[in-house]
Amino acid sequence: MEIDKIQKNLYDDIARLVEEARSYVASTANKTITLMYWKIGHRINTELLDNKRAEYGKQIVSQLATQLQEQYGKRGFEEKNIRRMIQFAQIFCDEQIVVSLIRQLSWTHFVALIPIKEEVKREFYALMCQTEHWNVKTLRAKIDGMLYERTLISGKPDEVIKTELTNMQKGENFSPDLIFKSPYFLDFTGLKGMYSEKSLEDSLIVSLEQFIMELGAGFSFVERQKRMIIDGEDFYLDLLFYHRKLKRLIAIELKLGKFKAAHKGQMELYLRWLDKYEKQAGEETPLGLILCAEGGHEQIELLQLENVGIKVAEYLTELPDRELLKQKLHRELELKRQLFDNRMEGENE
Image (cartoon, rainbow, N blue to C red):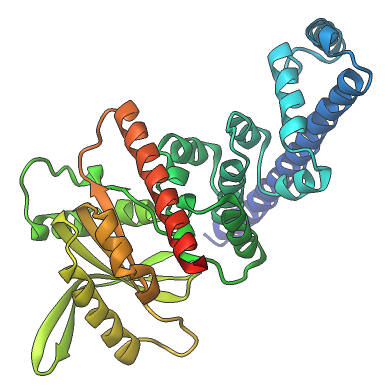
């Protein structure tokens, strides 16, 4: 028995060393290959553009792919992949930025990012991959689920978004609008047709892991039906979370119908109570999230909810056709940007 125990411990230690070495080799190889791909793309771009040979580009790339495959094998040097390298160097034109990104991102991450046309949107996903350690499958799922378009920050000007992304990257205070989104996809609850607020809350608790994944990285569940005694009367907050990066309590209220102005007063009361009795030393002021079946843009704008730390978002328990959802999100995005511009004009008058 003593020998068996020694042998098992020895095997476990050696297996761990092998796995660590393999992981290091794989990581180092990925960084080296990805940077090589960037340099190949950059070199081709320099040759074709600086020497005004763009008209010969297709022929040159095709011949180059054939030669490289003959010398080094087909894997990685297909014509399609070489064209990706060219796009890679065009889109991520700063080598130092690439060197920084490849510490966490693989070549397949970049392959998923390259088709994104909007620079700020691409930067958003690249940073989220870095900070939240997304694998490629998660990245593709987030892009397919239009996370950027749903994130509240997307309604702001590009300059504002880039500033907030830089703040997040540096570990400085950043806007909660990078965390909150609308709509939230709650299709995992399985709820359809008519249901009560309690049924929705019950379903979210049962599927708490999936709900937290939809909320985003950094959320930790604290309490359900948080009791607050105010003037001898009991009040109950639906869900209470904590966000590690924001260092704040997040109060969540669930509403079945359309957003109503009265919801603001209720949430403000909860937030003031949490700020007075629950906020710990070193924490920021609590924030509120009101999840409604339907938003009310004009009411939200007039109530100036941003000034009191309240976010309003829609949720969907049944997802529509993807094209319809895409159209809806783009309409919402345009409306958010229009409302932001109107607010800025009003402040400047």
